[in-house]
Image (cartoon, rainbow, N blue to C red; front, side, top):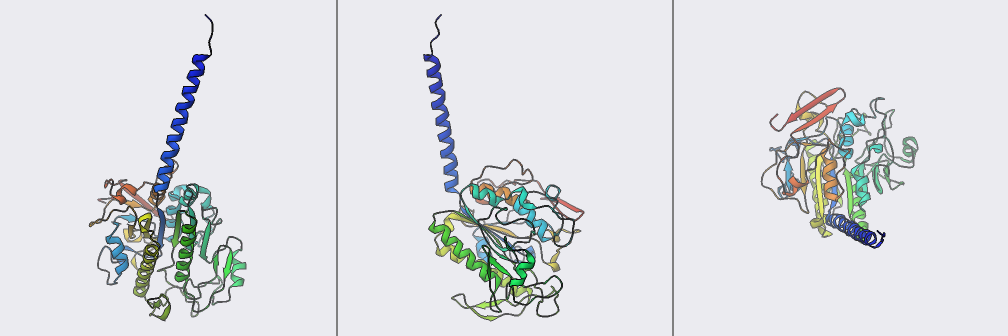
Length: 405
């Protein structure tokens, strides 16, 4: 029997064509998924518990913008961070619990924390892989690495520079500071403030959160002009108590909040109270909403709002009751389902990772088994709870609960 190459050639060509078809189909599927993915704004408030927001119970503080956005989105009730800010932020960015990252503590309060969190990768790294432009705004709070290591193209941060160390940065700042740690305020004077490696001079009329808002606006305009999707991590200072840098250097006061005219200019100040801060946080959310609307981007943008931990008076650092871990959460914009009821599906801060990846069209990350995507629940495609239990921790304490406790 003579050997003929023709059948083999035909088989090879057929295999090539099938492989090419599969590859093209896969590429088109990935491209379609990425092209439909929305812009993302992850807005993280500071020291806000559920009881402070007027979303779950009557708090006594009117927050009409927050309530209107939540009413036109989806609200989650059983939401756990950790009782302190840095472990919460570490969990939210990486989708990993402390037993994996070793971020059980406040890094700036203990020598036990020495792990560079950026080495684990964040949802911002995944967003850049999907072609997003990314920006970190507000507070850094993680003390290790550079913002680009965390996956951010740009940054607008208080007390952080990728190119200057803390001491060199503080030498550039001529505003009020006090104590051996050179404490400064994130509110009035708002310094030292750095935007994309450039130190920004500030004065007594500079209010940090409004600078962050301008950074967000400029970034979104640039992304829109470049026809790029954007992801913003807006880690606001509101409503952490202020360091009394012009007084006795105690952090048990609240800064006075600005009073804005219809054009957004500062025309006065409120008294320094928690309620005034909650109201101004509500104003900030309204300003974010109105700007994105003015750019005709809400149909293509999702905002996820939460907080790192409750206020000190409402359970911060508490491990013997869930008031120390329970924070607000709502999703708004784009494909988010408008719901008349609150969802009681348990949500862990670790779930932010998988949820953001799902929204931006990034494939699931098999290394983040502690993170569950809530995209289907938030968009109304599947209202079943993605997980049955949630877990939290601080220092050597551990907490766990289910939907029914």
